[in-house]
Amino acid sequence: AFLRFWNVIYTNEKKIDNHRAFLYQIAKNLITDFYRQKEKSSNIVLASNHPTILNIASEKNLMEEINIESDFEQIKHFIKKIQPEQQEVILLKYVDELETKEIAAIMNKPEGTIRVLLHRGLIALKKHYSNV
Image (cartoon, rainbow, N blue to C red; front, top):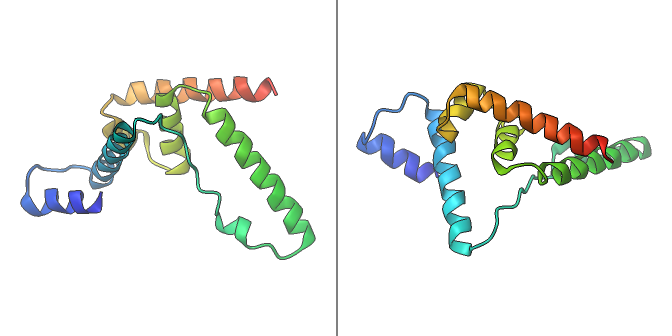
């Protein structure tokens, strides 16, 4: 992704207003191409090696970290149940901490559409969570 990004910048193929959004778009396209080639459905993989999980100092911290990991697994399970576009928007917003404007540029959709996808995705997550 970085090599493609660098090639576009170096060759001045096109003017880029938002470098971060453009880089995410390249990465998204590469992932899509990868799964198309493998003929697999795209599964969400969230890294569970968060630094706080690795630093376990006491039994109390161990129990707290186990609870965090359990919650993390539940969230991954619920996210897989909602529509793919909603999944993508939620992950870009809350995992990658991108702004709505950047997500819109990455997904090539209007900001209003992104806000609607985010809102509906959160409602769907809440619905799945409350059914537990």
